[in-house]
Image (cartoon, rainbow, N blue to C red; front, side, top):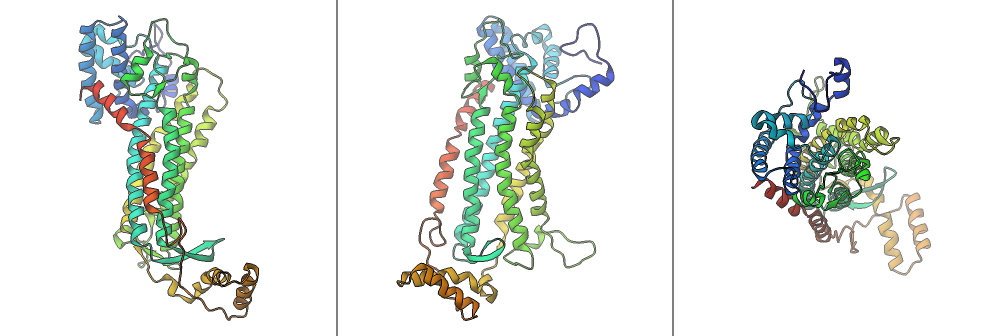
Length: 446
């Protein structure tokens, strides 16, 4: 068994080793290229304060770029007996460069190293999520405009209520995604602060230049207080998890609507046959399995903040091994949410809308409020108009006028889709991803 970074003369018991490492080696594969990126910034700073020679820095940076390329290709492997990604990177450097590779850890701990890796990983994943959310948003807006004149029933208490439209239905989920990204941006701000240099949570006697690594990695600012930097482990993940849960909540609700509206009892929408699955016993079945799985996966993601809270909510300040377990629920959640976004975007693009739903007489009473409002506009007091229409309904004498004239902002006749698109664009621009991307390109000499 290879020696660990922290081992001296005594090797840890094998069963203890297996239990304490757990799934960490598997989870650390998510973090490999970010660990390399953080090391590049760290050693650049070490050279500036005299802890590395310039010639050593150049050699180390060149080899770290090679390791980064391996990780980016998905070929990075944590070898048997190597505890984590940090140990593997250092091992690869020392194999290639000898003792120079042992110098990269000066002034940091695995504690601030993993804090940094998690933040770099998370902000990268957030950028991908924003792109995918924007893709879905644009499809929903297109569908909203395309079907803005197609009426459908609106419901309260699952009882028919008032006229709605597919323009409103698609558009509502588009606007929901804007709010979701605003919450995600707040979480991104929490994530995009630099913990490097906090070491094990109490700083270092080396004259570290923490502002330099902050600038090199494109962070908005430092996590200034070194104790707070460590306290941020778990807090950052929980905060981001709440934002992921917001997106997941929108997708879950949309998926439920789609399943309901696709059923024969509703018949509001239809999925192309190739987008459905069948039954092993019922030859007529065309099941909306994508939406059902989306609903389940997104409901699972909505439980993520609670999982993280339960792992870390009774820990005092300082580092504890409990925090390692957060990786197992947090890191894979991004892939699951990204898959759901891609599939829902695909389904929403191809969905077929029933343009004649309200031809069915069972939806006649949807127009009762419209009749009340017509009477009010003709001078009848609202309560009298309401009673008059109600009595006609009870007597079976109500005749619907299906002419709809809604003009206020956000209604059937005035969807405000351009305003919603402008709000989405402003929200996306507020992330300022260009600053981060440019900093990383410079560090990698790309």
